[in-house]
Length: 605
Image (cartoon, rainbow, N blue to C red; front, side):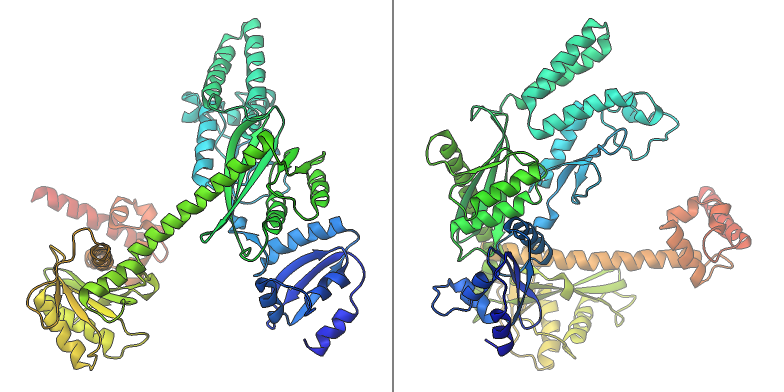
């Protein structure tokens, strides 16, 4: 500990607040709160304390710290949450990618609200529902709402006539005044009830409105409400009653080598209406109760809805303080409970079981991913007889049409994964106008390895048979690269030809090594073809416009940028052509007449 750090420790106040630990680069590596800053911060530097490995590693990196005195422990809790979200310190437990969780937004700040997905929560008068971890499920929910309710999807309300959505009964056309705000507002209220999971209350409200409309002889409105009621009952009929009543969030926690997962069951009005799981990082050496406390603070600081009861599997530090904080966020009393038995405990165990299932699935996916990437590379190295798994593999492919626009691609796989930042493409010149894949391959490998910059590969794959392999080897070995393995890949059956061996190596049909070789070959082919098409398109564009009087390189580029394709230029009027940058009326007329004459000539041929 430096003398400056010891001096700051000696002057810490006996007050509540938040402390920020920093490393020697000034980065914030940990944020914590304390009832007493002096006692809490000093405890990190006491050798007599039995610190966890994580705390010991953190303390070793502390070069400085700051603190902020607050008026109460509640203020310290709120500030701690905000600072963790802002700085995402290395040694704090944090939700993985928690900044990008999506929400369903209902724009109640507008006369005719919309419902859509957003990732930004603002204090703009709108209502937000979430966060959700599965954006696909959220989009499906929004699509369901739009099938159930004729919500507007346009962003403007000044249309001159209704759009198709109105005519197919998917919108009430508020943009043309065909619905009043009160009627539309009742529909939005129903949408909010459904998003909250209060299907019972929504069903009662819809049935009451349907009966009232029927009594008033408003049969069309009653029929529409009847259809909505029927659809909602079908959607919610599978929801099971799990508790007597009330709104609850049930939190389950599971830990394994794959990570830490918190599962939240959402119970609204006594029914299970949904669930979400959240992966947490930074809690490897923490106790479950500390992980739960960190999760509750981070999750509910962003949650759009806070229930009246939060059920946790273990007692957490500062439980009463957390309950008081949640009550303040909700604007009503919130209980944080740890049930020991009964239905509530069963729910917690169910949530924990689901969290464990998520971790098991993630571990299985990680194993499968490793098998098809690094595992496949190791397997390929074994089949080829290499001393070690090829970490970096480079593959070359040639593309041309009868020798025209000959190009080559080099794709790079590292650890069995494509590294697109290392891809290279080559426009070949030595064989222009005549097809010669052998000389093309010699040129590209020569350009790659003659003045090799960056790391050399552990394996080179030549997309071709014995002939192309021989030509590439002549160049590569001639450059002094004798230790780099080079193989050829026959195009039809993925037979691998090795240096000095006449018979090809045939990889097992369902081996991961074969699948990896196929992915590498396909990627090299795709990359080469894409570049070849780009050059061919550019050549065709230039060759046609070169015959138009008054059109040079700058005007050619301006036309291409303005219309995007040759078809777009052909279809443009004289006025549209003249409006392109650098064009004038005579040049536009020349282009227009040129294509019309070509069309006439084609018809006469």
